[in-house]
Each structure stands twice: as structure tokens, then as C-alpha cells.
Image (cartoon, rainbow, N blue to C red):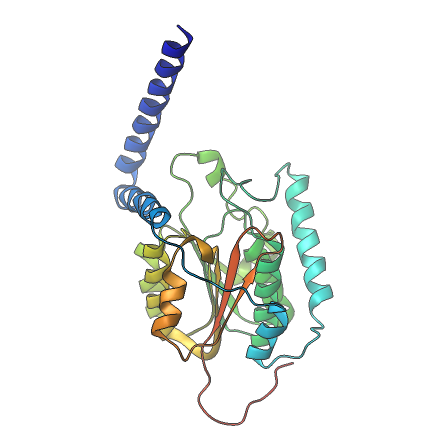
Length: 286
């Protein structure tokens, strides 16, 4: 009887999920189909042999060398202040931060945040594009850096969970109202929105990928963004180990310097790609 009861419960659970998924697709047909295609892409990626990524240490020093920025970096203390404040703000709202804390998705790791901070502070960008927001820890870090720079703007693309509406309401929770003047949040998939955004901006200086981590999606985003990335600009990619797209992109662009690093907790890999400057004298960034 217990076995029959468990099987019946699982069946009802599957039917319930299917019903909710069908309702979500009916409400947002393009996004619902796109999310379904990404789930199928995740399964394909899990069946593929992993790419032989080789993390480099000391990675943050190497990233600064690629940027022509000084090391040791004098921006570390500023980052720690921003990171601690953002984490405290989420905790005050009763939101747990960490791996799997956002409905099974991860919040940003401290190393991803620190790399994003240093890119924004040293490159002093006018235009940053980010895919994937969740609760907005990386978003907060980038906006705080732009605020200290005294210029620049961030465009973020995020497709909130289609079934977990409570999670959708937490999107960007770490971003206070005081920083939102420099921020444009576009709700939808990068497949639908990224091309038009990049075409309208013309050129960007920093790109941060933290949306769906499939080879299908990462390849699409890099191919869309890379032509618009300014020479000397950088792309930051989270969860690199989950697919082969970053490795294949670097294989196809052997002139592109890159650093692969472990996250702060050692759970995932992060890539920083820097678009080469044209030949000429190199100026050290401050």
C-alpha cells in the first residue's frame, strides 16, 4: 500500500507540475517555450564529456594584469563593504544567501562579485550588460561601482521563474532604490531581448553572463555580445564548467586572453575574457 501511495503521490506531483507549466506557457508562449528548450539543453550538456578547463591561480592577480590594473588592488576594501552591506540587506528581509538559495538557483559567489567590482572600477565603463539577476547581488556590486565612478549605466536582462511567482518578486531584492537610476531591468529571456539591446547600445565595455548556463545559451550570448564589446573590455562568465561553450569560444578565438578561476567556495568555475586592445603603447589603469 505504501508503494502504491508513493507512486500515486508522485503521479499527482508530475501532473500538477505539468498543469502549472502548461498554464505558464499559455500566459507567456515565447518565454515558456524558450525555458523548455533550455531545460532540454541542460540535459544534453550533462550527457556530453566535460571541457578540460584549467583554473589558474592566483586568478585575480592575473585578471588585473590583463586589464593593465595595479596589483595588489586597492579596491578590495571597498568591495568588502559593498558585499557585506548587500548580504546584510537580504538577511534583514529574511532571505538566505548561497548555493541553491534562490529556488534551486545560486546567488552570486563572493569571487564573482569581487571580479565584477574590479572590472567596473578599473575599466570605468559607460555601458554594462548583465544577463541573469536573481536577487541582484552582482547587480548591486556593479551599480555601487558605477556610483563611485560617477558615471555609467547597467542594463540587466532577467527571465524570472515562470512557475515560482514568489521568487519572481525577489528579483533584484539586493538593489536599493538609491541605485536604481543607473539601472534598466528588462524582463524576459536573453534570446528575445539581448540582440536588440546590444544593437541599440552599439558598444559596451563589460558583459556579465549569469543566466541559463547551457552551451546553447552561453554560445548565443557570446556571439551576440562579443562584436559589440569594446577593445580592452571584458566578459565575465559564471558556472563555466557546466558546458563546453566558453572553451569552444576561446578555441575559435585563440587571440583572446582569458583567466579561468574557481569560485570563492570552490564549487564552480568563473571565466574572465578580455578583448585585446589594438597594437600600441599600453596605459596602466588606476
